[in-house]
Image (cartoon, rainbow, N blue to C red; front, top):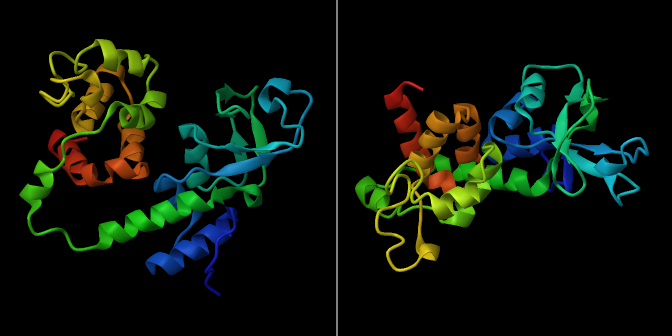
Amino acid sequence: MPITELPFRATTEQACAWLAGQTDTPWALARLIENGLTPYVWLDYDAAYPALFGDANGGYAAPIFFEGDTQRLAAGSAEVLITTTKDVHKLVTKLPPPGFRRELHELRFLKKELERLAGRLKREAEPAPVKIEAAQESLAGINKEQVLTAFSRLVKIDLQQALDEAGGIFGDDGARVKGSARKTKKHAVWNPITLALGLNEVHRVPIGHLKRAFGTHDFLHEWAPEWNQSLALLGK
């Protein structure tokens, strides 16, 4: 039977069944991951790792976001292997080798992320606007908070400092929209496509990570067609 109401943390089966009802297409774990959804597993408190759990003496839901870990799941791994996650304070933590192993049935997906994905897919399925040129002209850029949300965890540099001190990043205005900071720096906006390509070329951020950012964050959805076209022209 189709699922009409999602729990706060849905199992893989619940998530796939609900999305199938929303999109009229079949879903599996690999497709969930390919669409940028983050799987979670519940970690019961373990006194051997006090820094990981902090005050959460009952345990907490740990995200699985490291590319190697998610690729194993998407490829059909028979179990969950987590080598990197975030601690209870949301700080990235590398787990002691070989990592934590869990059963596939323990995977969970957040309701809000599933609903956001369904909304994006429905928008993408709508007919393209007639006046594409007008739509493109309305895309001024994204602000500093949005830049940091989408890209800061992908680079080793202090991206906030780079935005504040390096002009537009990558020389002159660079990724910063020309003239956007004329009155005050807080009004500055950046072209996310120019910025993403620069992060790939200068800081070696993998294209796959950047693709996931454009598919995950709502404020980048309208930039996705131009991003994909840029990748196609560059042969990436």
